[in-house]
Length: 293
Image (cartoon, rainbow, N blue to C red; front, side):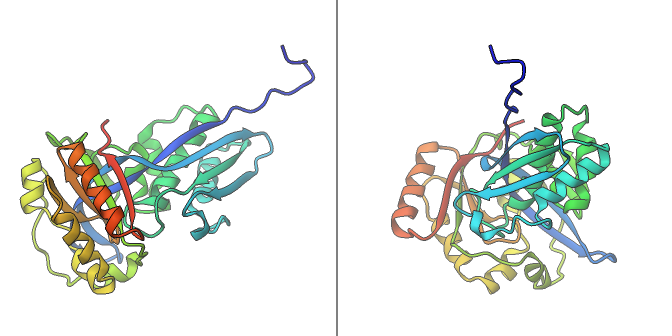
């Protein structure tokens, strides 16, 4: 039994910042406020970055970054993790602080919502650390000021996302959740703003997310073409994934440069991953599955 004068060590809690994948991303129009009107089906990988922390009593937010892609990020006040922590502190009037460590496993600026997922995981983590009663919808509303993708990342379940990302609705597609998924990035980071700037402003029609078959046959990512113009390696990734035995669908996620392939067989996914690692050792490859509810 610890001595009564010895303060118990603070509990460490952790959250996974699940990688976000756009199964389809239809850009419908550029809005008057400068944002783009989007229709997208978001799914989340079972894997992602790791955010862990401990509560403190001094109100400070102490933040550190490690992991294979940690060097590509600034741990200063502009980081989305710190901004999320400060936003929740202010919203709650919370006097406590936290020490937070981000282990960066997902590549930076890669179209799979890494920064947004990190911010969302931070909100979930701090709500637990500070033992706050707050609904997921309330956290999502707070998250919109941090970025268009952050609200959807709070729940990290399959969702239909419209507007600039502020309209989020849980959406079930038979046969989608639990599918084996392979994420591949050619080692390139691209600017979201530059990719949207290259969009040709052609409305190619609404998203039909009523079935997996519709998503495969009629779904698309309207940012693929401008992304390939900026980073031609994306086309090579898509071609390599498209030739994999047993692949159901391959497409770019978000504004790139990460692409994904869906398989209904885990062995086929593993075989494809092994082949890509062997042939393209500089590419980033992650084997995962689509996360359920």
